Image (cartoon, rainbow, N blue to C red):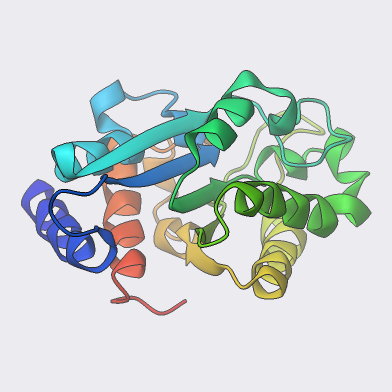
Length: 217
């Protein structure tokens, strides 16, 4: 699988990378603990797999922070974090947004009417710094937190995902369906929420297929 990922990235580079002698493409991954790689070794995280495959030809930034949500009125908005400010300063050419899982908690989803507008505002902030920015919205994996009021798989699938698709469409962004990738593979969610190393490998493979235009969502 590692060889497949490397080959896919090589194809992706031909599409996105500038000619020799110019700066490497910048790829920013903004998200929660699944983006940060909680529960796996750093090199096993899907973002790290991408960075390794790209090598010196691209600069990959992992701006994932555990337990963070997208909703500005939520308990822990990503927009309040230093990682968010660092991601903006990074001025990426490609932005992957992996948020929505923690938004499904009752304490956060009570503000669901703001979800699309908040999502659009995040994308707009990044595009102010790079109007040519390519944005990909990642649909959350089918997580389920055991405790009451926690992460809700039903909310993710019936409410969060449709709103992410709406935000993507209205901003001219593309979607990467990681929920579909992990459907039927819940055994790869080590604690019911976070993918294990195999899960991260599958996600990385699919992300690359979409970026290269080899997978339709």
